[in-house]
Length: 158
Ligand SMILES: Nc1ncnc2c1ncn2[C@@H]1O[C@H](COP(=O)(O)OP(=O)(O)OP(=O)(O)O)[C@@H](O)[C@H]1O
Ligand SMILES: [Mg+2]
Image (tube, rainbow, N blue to C red; front, top):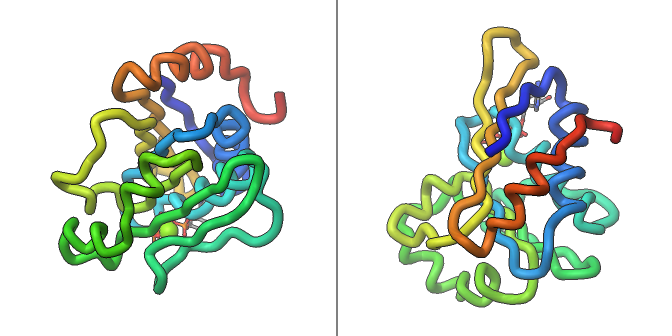
């Protein structure tokens, strides 16, 4: 597990880029945190780090945006999801358990569809207005290799 303090939007973006640059085909990255905590900023960094070029914004009205890169990147925002079942209509399993990299904002909404294995990232506001605490935790044996990746984090810019 890695706990890291971001002091700016740029910090969070660059941290996301570092995460994205370490992703492998099939990775699921679930983001937890309140409104305005920085999930979209982090997602943008992750997508760019995974090789996506161009604009990355939250898929507010579509639930999911897909981008092509070395591996396809699927960016979900579940804020407007009423019931986890709605994900079946989107054939979400094809994305989650396929060859791409899946990033999910508002992963709290997955509820009973929470996968067994994933990279968990929680982001929360801290006392200072631009500070965010980012906690990264690999869940399940498939993500064991991430433990070493997280241990070797040397700060942004490295
Ligand atoms: N350290 C920081 N990291 C990320 N964002 C920050 C930070 N400090 C301030 N901010 C600001 O917080 C906001 C984060 O917005 P963002 O859309 O990423 O949040 P979100 O968690 O995706 O919200 P929502 O739940 O509405 O989707 C931005 O306005 C950003 O400028
Ligand atoms: Mg967002």
